[in-house]
Image 1 (cartoon, helix red, strand yellow):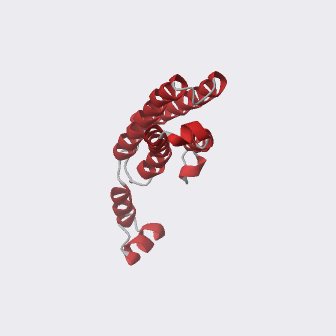
Image 2 (cartoon, rainbow, N blue to C red):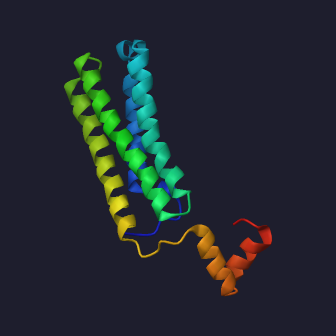
Length: 151
Protein backbone atom coordinates (compact mmCIF):
# COMPACT_ATOMS: atom_id res chain seq x y z
CA UNK A 1 0.00 0.00 0.00
CA UNK A 2 1.30 3.46 -0.83
CA UNK A 3 2.20 6.09 1.72
CA UNK A 4 -0.27 8.95 1.74
CA UNK A 5 0.80 12.57 1.84
CA UNK A 6 -2.77 13.89 2.10
CA UNK A 7 -5.92 12.30 3.48
CA UNK A 8 -7.74 13.12 0.24
CA UNK A 9 -5.61 10.47 -1.50
CA UNK A 10 -7.16 7.66 0.56
CA UNK A 11 -9.85 5.61 -1.17
CA UNK A 12 -11.67 5.19 2.15
CA UNK A 13 -12.03 8.96 2.53
CA UNK A 14 -13.09 9.36 -1.10
CA UNK A 15 -15.78 6.69 -0.65
CA UNK A 16 -16.91 8.26 2.61
CA UNK A 17 -17.22 11.62 0.87
CA UNK A 18 -19.38 10.06 -1.85
CA UNK A 19 -21.50 8.39 0.84
CA UNK A 20 -22.02 11.77 2.53
CA UNK A 21 -23.19 13.30 -0.74
CA UNK A 22 -25.63 10.46 -1.35
CA UNK A 23 -27.03 10.46 2.20
CA UNK A 24 -27.57 14.22 2.11
CA UNK A 25 -29.29 13.90 -1.26
CA UNK A 26 -31.66 11.23 0.07
CA UNK A 27 -32.37 13.01 3.35
CA UNK A 28 -33.45 16.15 1.47
CA UNK A 29 -36.50 14.27 0.14
CA UNK A 30 -39.67 15.71 1.74
CA UNK A 31 -40.74 12.71 3.84
CA UNK A 32 -37.24 11.92 5.05
CA UNK A 33 -36.53 15.59 5.69
CA UNK A 34 -39.52 15.82 8.04
CA UNK A 35 -38.22 13.03 10.28
CA UNK A 36 -35.75 15.30 12.05
CA UNK A 37 -34.42 12.65 14.41
CA UNK A 38 -33.54 10.05 11.79
CA UNK A 39 -32.40 12.66 9.27
CA UNK A 40 -30.04 14.32 11.74
CA UNK A 41 -28.75 11.03 13.17
CA UNK A 42 -27.89 9.46 9.81
CA UNK A 43 -26.23 12.70 8.71
CA UNK A 44 -24.14 12.85 11.89
CA UNK A 45 -23.12 9.22 11.47
CA UNK A 46 -22.08 9.57 7.85
CA UNK A 47 -20.21 12.84 8.52
CA UNK A 48 -18.41 11.01 11.32
CA UNK A 49 -17.19 8.39 8.84
CA UNK A 50 -15.72 11.05 6.59
CA UNK A 51 -14.36 13.24 9.42
CA UNK A 52 -12.61 10.61 11.51
CA UNK A 53 -10.36 9.47 8.67
CA UNK A 54 -8.51 12.79 8.28
CA UNK A 55 -8.64 13.43 12.02
CA UNK A 56 -6.81 10.16 12.62
CA UNK A 57 -4.45 10.81 9.71
CA UNK A 58 -3.43 14.07 11.35
CA UNK A 59 -2.64 12.59 14.76
CA UNK A 60 0.93 11.62 13.95
CA UNK A 61 0.93 8.04 15.20
CA UNK A 62 -0.24 4.79 13.69
CA UNK A 63 -1.93 3.82 16.96
CA UNK A 64 -4.00 7.00 17.06
CA UNK A 65 -4.78 6.73 13.35
CA UNK A 66 -6.07 3.19 13.91
CA UNK A 67 -8.20 4.41 16.82
CA UNK A 68 -9.86 7.08 14.66
CA UNK A 69 -10.30 4.61 11.81
CA UNK A 70 -12.15 2.44 14.31
CA UNK A 71 -14.50 5.35 15.03
CA UNK A 72 -15.04 5.82 11.29
CA UNK A 73 -15.75 2.09 10.84
CA UNK A 74 -18.30 2.11 13.66
CA UNK A 75 -19.99 5.16 12.17
CA UNK A 76 -20.24 3.37 8.82
CA UNK A 77 -22.01 0.51 10.61
CA UNK A 78 -24.28 3.01 12.34
CA UNK A 79 -25.12 4.52 8.95
CA UNK A 80 -26.03 1.07 7.64
CA UNK A 81 -28.28 0.45 10.64
CA UNK A 82 -30.08 3.75 10.10
CA UNK A 83 -30.60 2.85 6.46
CA UNK A 84 -32.78 0.01 7.73
CA UNK A 85 -34.94 2.54 9.54
CA UNK A 86 -35.10 4.65 6.39
CA UNK A 87 -36.29 1.78 4.22
CA UNK A 88 -38.71 0.57 6.91
CA UNK A 89 -40.32 4.03 6.89
CA UNK A 90 -40.41 4.08 3.07
CA UNK A 91 -38.06 7.07 3.01
CA UNK A 92 -35.82 5.36 0.43
CA UNK A 93 -36.50 2.93 -2.38
CA UNK A 94 -35.14 -0.58 -2.26
CA UNK A 95 -32.68 0.29 -5.05
CA UNK A 96 -31.39 3.42 -3.27
CA UNK A 97 -31.13 1.49 0.01
CA UNK A 98 -28.99 -1.20 -1.69
CA UNK A 99 -26.80 1.43 -3.33
CA UNK A 100 -26.20 3.31 -0.08
CA UNK A 101 -25.71 0.15 1.96
CA UNK A 102 -23.19 -1.20 -0.58
CA UNK A 103 -21.23 2.06 -0.57
CA UNK A 104 -21.16 2.10 3.25
CA UNK A 105 -20.00 -1.52 3.17
CA UNK A 106 -17.25 -0.76 0.65
CA UNK A 107 -16.12 2.22 2.74
CA UNK A 108 -16.00 -0.01 5.81
CA UNK A 109 -13.87 -2.58 3.93
CA UNK A 110 -11.49 0.16 2.79
CA UNK A 111 -11.17 1.37 6.38
CA UNK A 112 -10.48 -2.21 7.48
CA UNK A 113 -7.73 -2.45 4.86
CA UNK A 114 -6.11 0.72 6.22
CA UNK A 115 -6.31 -0.64 9.77
CA UNK A 116 -4.69 -3.91 8.67
CA UNK A 117 -1.95 -2.05 6.84
CA UNK A 118 -1.19 0.15 9.84
CA UNK A 119 -1.20 -2.86 12.17
CA UNK A 120 1.54 -4.43 10.02
CA UNK A 121 3.45 -1.16 9.63
CA UNK A 122 7.13 -1.23 10.53
CA UNK A 123 7.06 2.43 11.45
CA UNK A 124 5.57 2.82 14.91
CA UNK A 125 7.23 6.16 15.66
CA UNK A 126 5.29 9.31 16.37
CA UNK A 127 5.85 12.44 14.31
CA UNK A 128 7.71 13.97 17.27
CA UNK A 129 9.96 10.91 17.55
CA UNK A 130 10.70 11.08 13.83
CA UNK A 131 11.63 14.76 14.04
CA UNK A 132 13.89 14.13 17.04
CA UNK A 133 15.54 11.29 15.13
CA UNK A 134 16.12 13.57 12.14
CA UNK A 135 17.53 16.29 14.42
CA UNK A 136 20.06 13.79 15.74
CA UNK A 137 21.02 13.09 12.12
CA UNK A 138 21.30 16.85 11.42
CA UNK A 139 18.67 16.58 8.72
CA UNK A 140 17.80 19.94 7.08
CA UNK A 141 14.11 19.00 7.31
CA UNK A 142 14.32 18.43 11.05
CA UNK A 143 16.43 21.53 11.59
CA UNK A 144 13.70 23.57 9.92
CA UNK A 145 11.19 21.96 12.25
CA UNK A 146 13.44 22.75 15.22
CA UNK A 147 13.79 26.38 14.14
CA UNK A 148 10.02 26.83 13.99
CA UNK A 149 9.39 24.65 17.04
CA UNK A 150 6.63 22.72 15.29
CA UNK A 151 7.15 19.53 17.28
